[in-house]
Amino acid sequence: MAKKKFKFNLKFSYDAPVTLSFVIICALLFLLNTFVIKNGALGKILASPTTQAGALPFILKQPVSYLRLLLYIFGSGEVNNFITYILIVLLLGPAMEERYGSVIIGIMIFVAALFSGVLNACFCVESLTGPVPVVCMMIFLTAFMSFSNKTVPITFLATIIFFVYFSITSGIGAVRLIICIAGGLCGSLFAFLTSPKVKAAKKTTASSVSYSEKPKKRGGLLSRAEKVAYAEEIDRQSPRNKNNRDSLDDDDETTVVGTLKF
Image (cartoon, rainbow, N blue to C red):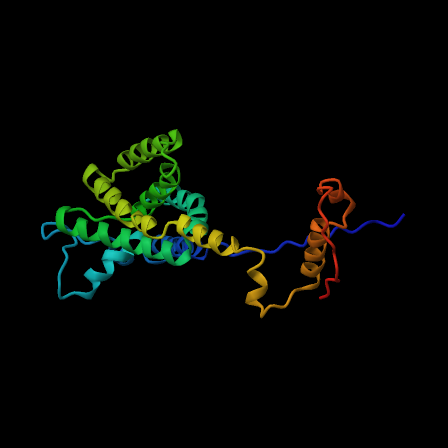
Protein backbone atom coordinates (compact mmCIF):
# COMPACT_ATOMS: atom_id res chain seq x y z
CA MET A 1 0.00 0.00 0.00
CA ALA A 2 1.23 3.43 -0.86
CA LYS A 3 1.97 5.65 2.07
CA LYS A 4 -0.05 8.80 2.30
CA LYS A 5 1.90 12.00 2.56
CA PHE A 6 0.53 14.61 4.85
CA LYS A 7 1.12 18.18 3.81
CA PHE A 8 0.89 21.02 6.25
CA ASN A 9 -0.11 24.24 4.56
CA LEU A 10 0.57 26.62 7.40
CA LYS A 11 1.03 30.32 6.87
CA PHE A 12 2.46 32.67 9.42
CA SER A 13 0.48 35.87 9.81
CA TYR A 14 1.83 39.11 11.20
CA ASP A 15 -1.63 39.69 12.63
CA ALA A 16 -0.86 42.46 15.12
CA PRO A 17 1.94 44.57 13.61
CA VAL A 18 2.08 47.21 16.35
CA THR A 19 2.00 44.73 19.22
CA LEU A 20 4.50 42.34 17.65
CA SER A 21 6.84 45.15 16.63
CA PHE A 22 6.70 46.57 20.15
CA VAL A 23 7.54 43.18 21.69
CA ILE A 24 10.37 42.54 19.22
CA ILE A 25 11.96 45.93 19.92
CA CYS A 26 11.70 45.35 23.68
CA ALA A 27 13.28 41.91 23.36
CA LEU A 28 16.14 43.12 21.17
CA LEU A 29 16.94 46.04 23.45
CA PHE A 30 16.74 43.82 26.51
CA LEU A 31 19.19 41.32 25.03
CA LEU A 32 21.44 44.14 23.83
CA ASN A 33 21.49 45.79 27.23
CA THR A 34 22.00 42.51 29.09
CA PHE A 35 24.60 40.69 27.03
CA VAL A 36 26.26 43.19 24.70
CA ILE A 37 26.52 46.58 26.38
CA LYS A 38 28.04 46.02 29.79
CA ASN A 39 28.60 49.57 31.04
CA GLY A 40 24.89 50.36 31.39
CA ALA A 41 24.92 53.22 28.88
CA LEU A 42 21.85 51.87 27.09
CA GLY A 43 20.04 51.45 30.39
CA LYS A 44 20.37 55.15 31.09
CA ILE A 45 18.75 55.99 27.77
CA LEU A 46 15.93 53.49 28.36
CA ALA A 47 14.90 55.23 31.57
CA SER A 48 12.49 58.12 31.96
CA PRO A 49 13.72 61.53 33.18
CA THR A 50 13.17 62.59 36.77
CA THR A 51 12.90 65.82 38.70
CA GLN A 52 15.95 67.98 39.25
CA ALA A 53 16.67 66.15 42.49
CA GLY A 54 16.70 62.75 40.76
CA ALA A 55 19.41 60.76 39.04
CA LEU A 56 18.29 61.64 35.50
CA PRO A 57 16.88 65.18 35.65
CA PHE A 58 15.03 66.53 32.65
CA ILE A 59 17.16 69.20 30.94
CA LEU A 60 15.54 71.32 28.25
CA LYS A 61 18.73 71.76 26.23
CA GLN A 62 19.52 68.04 26.05
CA PRO A 63 17.81 66.07 23.24
CA VAL A 64 18.36 62.86 25.19
CA SER A 65 15.91 64.03 27.83
CA TYR A 66 13.14 64.21 25.21
CA LEU A 67 14.00 60.75 23.91
CA ARG A 68 13.81 59.35 27.42
CA LEU A 69 10.19 60.50 27.68
CA LEU A 70 9.28 57.74 25.18
CA LEU A 71 12.11 55.22 25.01
CA TYR A 72 11.78 54.07 28.60
CA ILE A 73 8.84 51.80 27.71
CA PHE A 74 11.23 49.60 25.70
CA GLY A 75 13.51 48.99 28.66
CA SER A 76 13.24 46.60 31.57
CA GLY A 77 15.36 46.12 34.64
CA GLU A 78 14.94 42.47 35.61
CA VAL A 79 14.20 39.31 33.67
CA ASN A 80 11.05 38.46 35.67
CA ASN A 81 9.57 41.91 35.14
CA PHE A 82 10.39 41.81 31.45
CA ILE A 83 8.78 38.39 30.89
CA THR A 84 5.66 39.28 32.89
CA TYR A 85 4.98 42.57 31.12
CA ILE A 86 5.72 41.17 27.68
CA LEU A 87 3.36 38.24 28.22
CA ILE A 88 0.56 40.59 29.24
CA VAL A 89 1.16 42.71 26.13
CA LEU A 90 1.14 39.63 23.90
CA LEU A 91 -2.09 38.36 25.46
CA LEU A 92 -4.06 41.61 25.36
CA GLY A 93 -2.45 43.50 22.47
CA PRO A 94 -3.66 41.49 19.42
CA ALA A 95 -7.31 41.56 20.50
CA MET A 96 -7.20 45.30 21.19
CA GLU A 97 -5.42 45.97 17.92
CA GLU A 98 -8.01 43.99 15.98
CA ARG A 99 -10.80 45.91 17.70
CA TYR A 100 -9.44 49.46 17.42
CA GLY A 101 -6.93 49.20 14.58
CA SER A 102 -3.13 49.36 14.46
CA VAL A 103 -2.94 53.13 14.01
CA ILE A 104 -5.16 53.86 17.02
CA ILE A 105 -3.25 51.40 19.21
CA GLY A 106 0.02 53.05 18.16
CA ILE A 107 -1.37 56.47 19.12
CA MET A 108 -2.57 55.11 22.46
CA ILE A 109 0.86 53.67 23.26
CA PHE A 110 2.49 56.98 22.35
CA VAL A 111 0.11 59.02 24.52
CA ALA A 112 0.36 56.65 27.50
CA ALA A 113 4.16 56.64 27.38
CA LEU A 114 4.45 60.41 26.93
CA PHE A 115 1.94 61.26 29.66
CA SER A 116 3.59 58.96 32.20
CA GLY A 117 7.05 60.20 31.25
CA VAL A 118 6.07 63.83 31.72
CA LEU A 119 4.41 63.09 35.07
CA ASN A 120 7.48 61.21 36.25
CA ALA A 121 9.74 64.10 35.21
CA CYS A 122 7.57 66.49 37.22
CA PHE A 123 6.89 64.58 40.43
CA CYS A 124 9.19 61.59 40.87
CA VAL A 125 12.90 61.35 41.72
CA GLU A 126 13.22 57.78 40.39
CA SER A 127 13.06 56.77 36.74
CA LEU A 128 10.45 54.60 35.10
CA THR A 129 11.62 51.56 33.15
CA GLY A 130 9.55 49.07 31.22
CA PRO A 131 6.17 49.00 29.44
CA VAL A 132 4.10 49.44 32.61
CA PRO A 133 1.97 52.31 31.20
CA VAL A 134 1.29 50.24 28.08
CA VAL A 135 0.19 47.28 30.19
CA CYS A 136 -2.13 49.53 32.21
CA MET A 137 -3.59 50.95 29.02
CA MET A 138 -4.39 47.50 27.60
CA ILE A 139 -5.97 46.39 30.88
CA PHE A 140 -8.24 49.44 30.82
CA LEU A 141 -9.13 48.84 27.17
CA THR A 142 -10.13 45.27 27.99
CA ALA A 143 -12.31 46.52 30.82
CA PHE A 144 -13.99 49.14 28.61
CA MET A 145 -15.34 46.34 26.42
CA SER A 146 -17.42 45.15 29.39
CA PHE A 147 -18.17 48.59 30.80
CA SER A 148 -20.03 49.40 27.59
CA ASN A 149 -22.57 46.73 28.59
CA LYS A 150 -22.89 48.25 32.08
CA THR A 151 -21.17 45.30 33.74
CA VAL A 152 -18.04 45.11 35.87
CA PRO A 153 -16.10 41.92 35.04
CA ILE A 154 -14.60 40.08 38.00
CA THR A 155 -11.63 39.14 35.82
CA PHE A 156 -10.80 42.83 35.47
CA LEU A 157 -10.80 43.29 39.24
CA ALA A 158 -8.63 40.21 39.68
CA THR A 159 -6.21 41.44 37.01
CA ILE A 160 -5.92 44.84 38.65
CA ILE A 161 -5.26 43.29 42.05
CA PHE A 162 -2.62 40.95 40.64
CA PHE A 163 -1.00 43.71 38.62
CA VAL A 164 -0.83 46.13 41.57
CA TYR A 165 0.57 43.42 43.85
CA PHE A 166 3.20 42.37 41.33
CA SER A 167 4.23 45.95 40.60
CA ILE A 168 4.65 46.85 44.27
CA THR A 169 6.59 43.68 45.10
CA SER A 170 8.85 44.22 42.08
CA GLY A 171 9.94 47.58 43.53
CA ILE A 172 8.18 50.03 41.26
CA GLY A 173 6.83 52.02 44.20
CA ALA A 174 3.40 53.48 44.86
CA VAL A 175 4.11 56.89 43.27
CA ARG A 176 5.45 55.49 40.03
CA LEU A 177 2.61 52.95 39.90
CA ILE A 178 0.04 55.75 40.16
CA ILE A 179 1.87 57.60 37.39
CA CYS A 180 1.76 54.51 35.16
CA ILE A 181 -1.94 53.97 35.85
CA ALA A 182 -2.66 57.63 35.04
CA GLY A 183 -0.71 57.33 31.78
CA GLY A 184 -2.50 54.12 30.81
CA LEU A 185 -5.88 55.67 31.59
CA CYS A 186 -5.05 58.75 29.53
CA GLY A 187 -3.95 56.64 26.57
CA SER A 188 -7.04 54.44 26.73
CA LEU A 189 -9.34 57.47 26.54
CA PHE A 190 -8.87 57.42 22.76
CA ALA A 191 -11.06 54.32 22.80
CA PHE A 192 -14.07 56.56 23.38
CA LEU A 193 -13.18 58.70 20.36
CA THR A 194 -12.77 55.72 18.06
CA SER A 195 -15.40 53.36 19.38
CA PRO A 196 -15.92 50.26 17.22
CA LYS A 197 -19.67 50.74 17.63
CA VAL A 198 -19.48 53.81 15.40
CA LYS A 199 -17.77 51.79 12.68
CA ALA A 200 -20.27 48.98 13.11
CA ALA A 201 -23.16 51.41 12.83
CA LYS A 202 -21.78 52.75 9.56
CA LYS A 203 -21.42 49.24 8.16
CA THR A 204 -24.95 48.37 9.26
CA THR A 205 -26.32 51.51 7.61
CA ALA A 206 -24.51 50.72 4.39
CA SER A 207 -25.71 47.12 4.38
CA SER A 208 -29.31 48.06 5.22
CA VAL A 209 -29.90 49.65 1.82
CA SER A 210 -33.10 48.20 0.38
CA TYR A 211 -33.02 45.58 -2.32
CA SER A 212 -34.63 47.86 -4.85
CA GLU A 213 -31.97 50.55 -4.37
CA LYS A 214 -28.99 48.32 -5.09
CA PRO A 215 -29.55 48.08 -8.88
CA LYS A 216 -29.60 51.87 -9.08
CA LYS A 217 -25.95 52.00 -7.96
CA ARG A 218 -25.02 49.88 -10.96
CA GLY A 219 -26.89 52.00 -13.44
CA GLY A 220 -30.17 50.05 -13.21
CA LEU A 221 -28.70 46.75 -14.50
CA LEU A 222 -29.69 43.56 -12.73
CA SER A 223 -27.50 40.53 -12.37
CA ARG A 224 -28.68 37.10 -13.49
CA ALA A 225 -29.42 35.97 -9.90
CA GLU A 226 -31.37 39.15 -9.19
CA LYS A 227 -33.41 38.69 -12.35
CA VAL A 228 -34.38 35.14 -11.34
CA ALA A 229 -35.26 36.21 -7.78
CA TYR A 230 -37.30 39.15 -9.00
CA ALA A 231 -39.17 36.98 -11.52
CA GLU A 232 -39.99 34.42 -8.85
CA GLU A 233 -41.29 37.14 -6.54
CA ILE A 234 -43.55 38.56 -9.29
CA ASP A 235 -44.80 35.07 -10.11
CA ARG A 236 -45.69 34.38 -6.47
CA GLN A 237 -47.70 37.59 -6.30
CA SER A 238 -49.42 37.00 -9.64
CA PRO A 239 -53.17 36.01 -9.69
CA ARG A 240 -52.26 33.24 -12.11
CA ASN A 241 -50.40 31.44 -9.31
CA LYS A 242 -52.56 28.55 -8.05
CA ASN A 243 -51.55 29.27 -4.46
CA ASN A 244 -53.10 32.68 -4.72
CA ARG A 245 -56.26 31.73 -6.65
CA ASP A 246 -58.13 30.58 -3.57
CA SER A 247 -57.37 33.80 -1.78
CA LEU A 248 -58.91 35.91 -4.54
CA ASP A 249 -62.42 37.16 -4.23
CA ASP A 250 -64.97 35.46 -6.47
CA ASP A 251 -66.14 38.84 -7.70
CA ASP A 252 -62.64 39.86 -8.69
CA GLU A 253 -62.57 40.08 -12.46
CA THR A 254 -58.91 40.96 -12.77
CA THR A 255 -57.44 40.03 -16.14
CA VAL A 256 -53.72 39.38 -16.44
CA VAL A 257 -52.26 40.41 -19.71
CA GLY A 258 -48.68 40.66 -20.76
CA THR A 259 -45.35 39.05 -20.08
CA LEU A 260 -42.49 40.23 -17.85
CA LYS A 261 -39.29 40.43 -19.86
CA PHE A 262 -35.74 41.26 -18.78
